[in-house]
Amino acid sequence: MKQKLAQAVKYWDYVAPVVKYPANQKEYNALVDELNELLDMVGDNENHRLIGLVDVISNIVLSYEENVYPTESNKGIDALKFLMEAHHLSQSDLTEIGSQGVVSEILNGKRILNVRQIKALGKRFHVDPATFIDEN
Image 1 (spheres, rainbow, N blue to C red):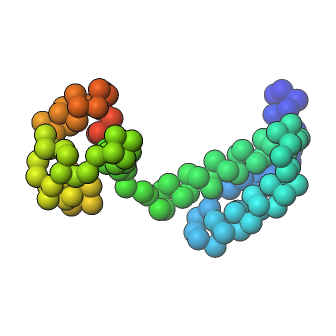
Image 2: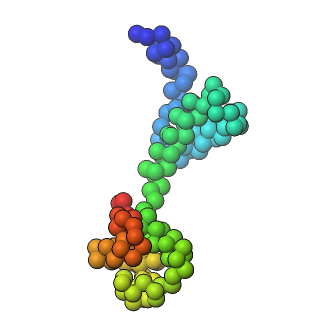
Image 3: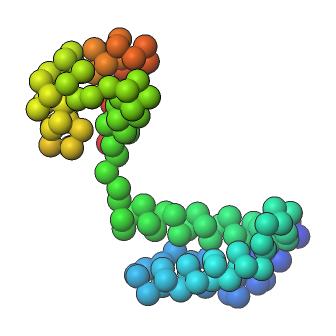
């Protein structure tokens, strides 16, 4: 066994509770508190000896949050809203999608873009149609 691994194994009983995936909200809150403590110690020093521990705990916290508090992906709608604002367009300007009412329903998440609309938006804004497709 390599020396670094042997040391990790030797001290694992001390380290494991700190890097354990939280089983519930209470453990999650404790882990976030520990992360905040570490961040106070590390500060802005990207070369601090504990930056690796910050990274590990941050990833555990992020993983827990993604599993317990999943977010709805609205990448396509967010892109459409951004492009409308950038081009100073109103809902009624997007006739290739449909009426102002249809556009409003799409922007408010009550209706999803169909393939025809996605292709038309890609052509209008000169972007890859995948820009308007959500990942989930």
